[in-house]
Length: 395
Image (cartoon, rainbow, N blue to C red; front, side, top):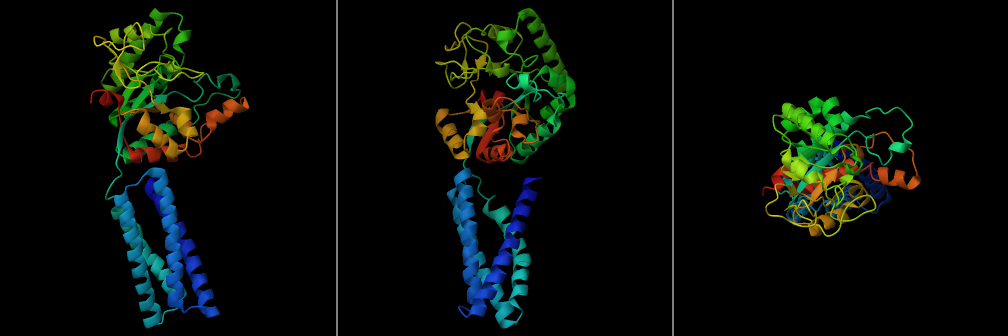
């Protein structure tokens, strides 16, 4: 469902609930003698608008909409409160139309106007201040990752992979964002049309390994080099441009696998984005820069002005982006790096990706937050000026 249809559905639902509250409340207050219908309606409408503003305040807390929009929204609510009451007074008090019909006409006629004004002039007139960041996706099939692979018992279907990519593209297109998609060889072979589509939409195509195998497990480096060269040729044929970026599966670049760096430079790559600059039980090293730098081939933690390869360390993403509340995630992005680099897996954003039963902790970490992951990602696209990694490192 598109963003517009979701907003329209939510607005229609709240309008219907408002009708029930306003009609029944006005009837009860006027029949009990506490107030005449006009006063009862004005009072109840004020309560409804307070509820609307409370919901908006919750939205602001999550997304950081600017103060200018907040001021406009308050003026918008006050103005329509006056218009609503005038509409009710004219039709019910002056014309004598029964108030249930007046309320229905009010919500139908003025409701459409309110929806249009709110959508096009209140929230869209001044976009929120946006932080610039690099956006990347590690694109592999849901069963290619080794973390849960031992526990897959059913047939390995693609699990609506194509849908997850098109859903991501829809959001990126809506907010005019660009991203880098690091693809495995299997994606290029099985879904060449999607690789071409991503490039046509203005996104960058990088390489995520010839297979989704850690660099530590590469036994024949020369064979790996040949496979990389073949994959470069395939992608170049599909997109018209050779890939500039590489990301090792599982962020498996460390001191024992830095042999890959001179190989990447020789193959014509401009940058690598395989380094996680914080040590974790799964990957990462300490002491490395947290912003893009020309990496030394002898020590990942050192810069080398003569190096032919730029290292683009990842800031946050994946499971961390799903586990953390949006407000905490935004705070971290504001303090960790001047130009943060985010990463996601399309299949982990999608609640419809097949689920694997494994150890409880692994299963929890793998699927925590997937129900709301696309919504969180959409909020981030609204707040952050995402761009391709090759554009970020050249500005």
